[in-house]
Length: 591
Figure 1 (cartoon, rainbow, N blue to C red):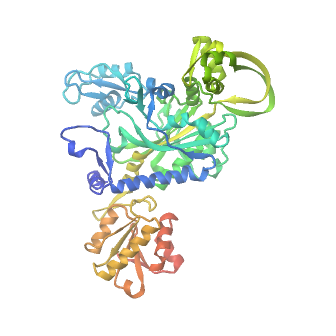
Figure 2 (tube, rainbow, N blue to C red):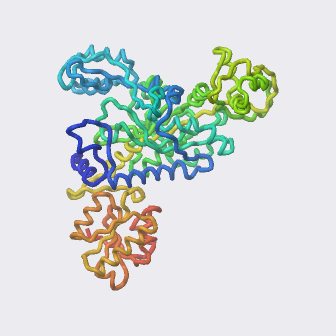
């Protein structure tokens, strides 16, 4: 692949290009990219394809929500991001430039022919590598400082008070965890429950230099899927006609580079993947990337070792896709987050995020119960008594009892609750249900990375001319309507066809400027899968030709059949050759 010509097409064709270009000489800010008209359409179609595979077929138990981009500090204290969401940074003591330490080490040693894997290394271990190999600043040759942690959260203030700290979310996930009790109630208090979200996130990357692969602002598609760990059966697992290509943990440890293939159930029963729902979403992820044009041999799942996993994860797999420019690139992450997030938010908020599990056999338990003291509440809070009692009632009794025992007071919904306004008792009860915090698996997709690898895999050159073989249903423009010559009668017919396609939701473009061969090449290069040509026969018999981008095959159809043929070819993925056979049409090959 000619990377230079590919990147030129991406920019000049209006797919993507660096942001703030007019200020390039005055503000060097990497990690931000604009999408042009074609990029916006492609990105939208890739997102909609994700919904069609992950959400719509399972919408009786997977729903989509939208939560704020900016959230208060306590949310990210609870999630662990304030403490753990860091990268290692090192600074040149001479020129002041700052670098991400692990990337710098790998790049500089790579120039010497030394291959070292830095993922999971501590700050001290990274610092030791810099000293042992005498790594200097790659810009000026200066000495490097000691390695320090750098938090990747974008910090802001909410409102006019500087102490009201908020952060731009680094993942969409926390909004879904915080919304869990609301959505759980709306969905009938049943598990399993999937909450999906698509939206912008921000990570203050140290030195992003890989285009759409590493951005400071990007779009995620995520599902937080909650289930009972004692009933983790997925009824759809065996419906997946796909094999998962996986490098399991034990192979990662021994240095095996070649993926092994497993049916989704085999991966679970063999202990490779921890539960059926995780294997199910990994199967859907494989199908999804394949439908975007990524062949199965160009994708696999890489298990993350314990020291490499995020702080919330008990098991993780990265879905890797091959890029000619960047090598193997992670496009989605699949994490078994257990009850970590809901458990932390329950502790930090005081809100009971547990749910009921009905027992087959009743059992006797000792429960902590908290009852309001109405008389004392009335004395302390007066007319606010009903709201205070409501606040006490929604708090987790165990948390409330622990907080009062340790601190003597606790704030709930703005009210300071002390030990004298409640009664705390331990009661022995026979129960038919028990409370537990649901477990969670998370399939998380980076949209911008997927846009890039989809475009790269689609790009080829034929006779020195660029061609984008994008799948028809995700192509930004589906049809080019092309009168063979700029003659009024042809123009009028072409514009009518263009309007009819637009009315049924087919994104089309009308173009009557230039030689027909040049126009074919122009729209081939930006991935338009079909061209409708109005030629000399059209005014006589009301027929047009429909040309396929990839095979160059053409069929002549009645103008009355255009909508059906085009929608079948785009949305049902029926090839022009198959359509010709089914309709008894002649197949024309002119190129």
